[in-house]
Amino acid sequence: MPAAIPHHLRDQEVTRQINYNDREDAEYVFEILVSGALVVWKGRPGSDVGGEVEGVFGPTAWENVQGIPKRDTLAP
View 1 (tube, rainbow, N blue to C red):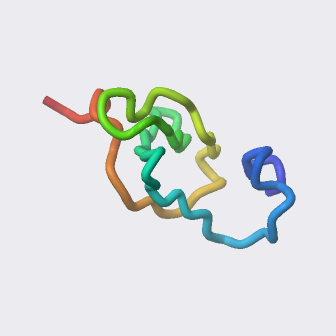
View 2 (cartoon, one colour):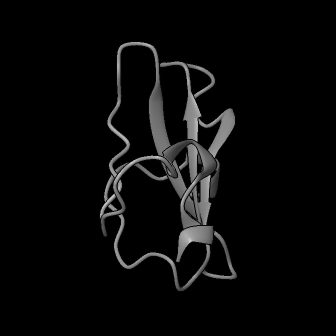
View 3 (tube, rainbow, N blue to C red):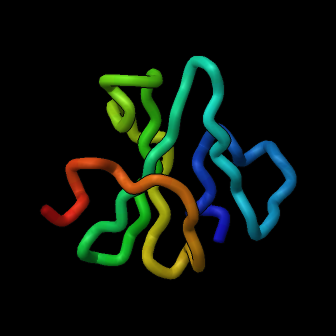
């Protein structure tokens, strides 16, 4: 689904896999909403990881996610 591909990735070859790899200046976390949508958050390493939305994928636009969940979405 082209609409499920984040705007900044639309010029790249379409694959069934999108990787968000941590870098020295950015870390990524994810959140799965009650609706089933997947939100990928980006932030500077440390205090604001998850400070900016990097991408949102509807419930039928993703099959699998690996990585670190956003802290404030973890159960107590």
